[in-house]
Length: 160
Picture 1 (cartoon, rainbow, N blue to C red):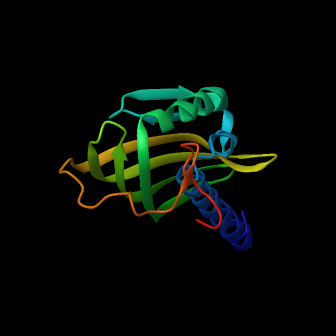
Picture 2 (picture 1 turned 90 degrees about the vertical axis):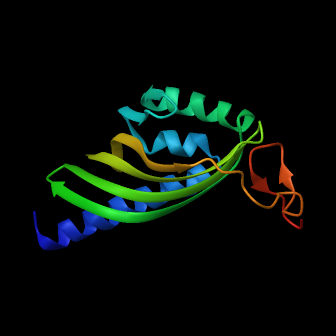
């Protein structure tokens, strides 16, 4: 592998992780599912849930708005280790969210990732969400003065 190829691979994997974070924030579950290989797995042991393949990932995502009022996720890039057409890595995140039942929480977590190069580019082969610290203290503030949101999908209505 040339240095230029390694650099290009790192940039593409970082873009993949950014695309994932954006899709989560926009509640675009079709896009999230498309970021995984056909055999890709998304594991969230604290939920607990294990989703095998894009169809299960998409189906899970479509249920999320009924449970989660809002989620704000900030991700910090971690390490990427390349090995030909596969790679491993980590991303660190801070989340702030409120569930529909009124409970709020903050999480500091790590995504443990395995990536695979496909004809469509780098995709997640596995993404494991590990919460390192959870603060379930009630959140201050409200969403009452926030932007108008359409249909519970979390998309801001233009002009609101």
